[in-house]
Amino acid sequence: MAMNTEAKRDRQIVGFSLSPEMAAAVKMEAARRKLTLRKLFEEMWQDYAKKQK
Image 1 (cartoon, rainbow, N blue to C red):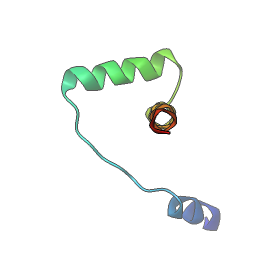
Image 2: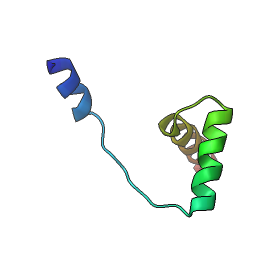
Image 3: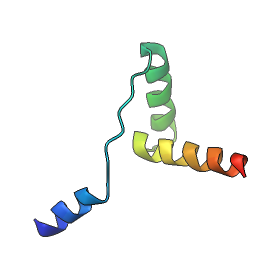
């Protein structure tokens, strides 16, 4: 149980709202790539960060 509590400490929930159409498109893309929404967002953010350099 201590490991589970510790794992939660290095994570933070970030919530945002999307239109139903965009939410469906994002979920379908994650499913197509066999990724979780979190992994898809991380991938997108890494691409964004690279373009900012």
